[in-house]
Image (cartoon, rainbow, N blue to C red; front, side, top):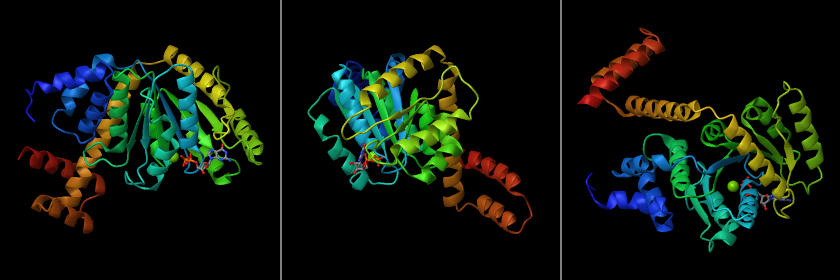
Length: 320
Ligand SMILES: Nc1nc2c(ncn2[C@@H]2O[C@H](COP(=O)(O)OP(=O)(O)O)[C@@H](O)[C@H]2O)c(=O)[nH]1
Ligand SMILES: [Mg+2]
């Protein structure tokens, strides 16, 4: 497609007008990193920042998808439109987890007020979190009141979600001691709200007490992290969760520092650079790269010097 294709501004304009087919198509374009992706992303910029982006993360099986589904139903009761971005790096788009999520979300498929998109892989530079950020932006520009991001709690993904979301929900399931440890190890730092889901299960109150105890060790804050209990199947505690999210979104907006957006771009750029460098080292068979690899192997240069040399050759080879 050519840069002056008159269709492009129309697609962005239709998306901004809230047309669902245009949103779906724009997401596909951006996901594939097709030539007019940048045009669309540029055109929507003035329309960003209206939606509240809520991230749900937690270990597999904690009930994220079920809870997101219940939360979406609650939002619809409140008259809000919703976009859902389900990110699951471990499953191909037709695979188990995402398919299961589709079934769980099936009650919303006939509702134009709910737009759901699963992201499972990303060929282009920038990775899944960049794709998720862009899809969330498209939903925001399309006028969705709330954008929900579901990510599997695996390593980096919480931290990446934290950069994209306005409100961060961390979900724990009852009686998973290791998960409590994992939460302790770092997720606590990014959570705005902790949720113990499956409150119908016997160990739920114990898990809640553990989390409360853990939080009490933190420095006092004028906006402490609430620990909520939900039963995503019976949908108890979901209205309270929605209220807490509203409250937290308002608080975070009041205390918003505009550097957050720049921080997000910085992070996404760093990831894209790292990926470019990695693919260069792994796939280039140029003499320059082979020589650097050899020098490392023979301990003639250290890794940081070698990395600097790699970036030099990357620069030269990209220019060719
Ligand atoms: N008992 C009970 N089971 C739940 C609850 N929420 C989810 N589940 C079940 O837990 C399993 C995993 O849920 P899912 O939403 O796929 O978890 P995810 O992997 O975190 O997205 C499914 O069998 C759900 O039906 C809950 O509140 N109580
Ligand atoms: Mg899920």
